[in-house]
Length: 329
Image (cartoon, rainbow, N blue to C red):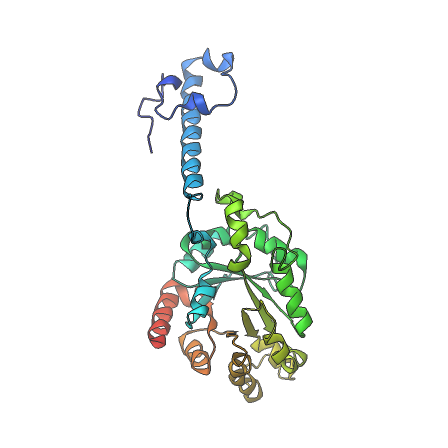
């Protein structure tokens, strides 16, 4: 990138190698040109910075529209779907709070997905709108758990950049089909067209839209006796990528609230992967730490949240993730 190396005082717009004057859409106001040196010292550097920003965005835009590209851009690849399709496990951590810094620290541990919970947290899409962009920048998937089966919440989560959607309290196959419908653009679904994250990353949405349906992963969460009863029908719904077990709510529905380690709950959870696996669907679960995550991996789960950096620290998550990947091999 070409930088203006002239001193701030007396800097001339026509000497800028980035050609500020060509990028400026309006004629230069006379009051800005014929001004004191103090005002000019403030005005000219701002104009040059604006020019450099425009050149940087233009380069990103050109990179996002490479002619003849056959494969989707890196921003459009969902690592969760890629690893599951390869028979590997997708590991993730949960975002402990609506902080961009915590989101960056979490995904820098090397996980495939970042769990962003909008069901049990006091914030909404506005507070976490940059977290999915941060995930895309490092090649991770932002998984947003919406409050329920609601087209509006799903659409907002996808429009800010989420590439994986978790829908809680799915009890029937019809609800699973509606979840898929809300996550996909026509003709596969009914999602409205107006993504915001492409603007935030300066990506042409005409590049994203054809790959959106293929990129988006749908996770349905089973948390009730009715859902467990209908799990075979739910697992057979086309477009469902992961069938997720909710240990806490399953325990509550069995009358042992707050006891996910109860023998009756553990028995159901250990049989869960085999029940959904017979229909070619991976099972998902959440727990904390290496030991529990390794146990569920051995039971057949392939979509696992291993905890948060708030409880384990970034080093703890990285070490646990390294051990789990070694266990895979």
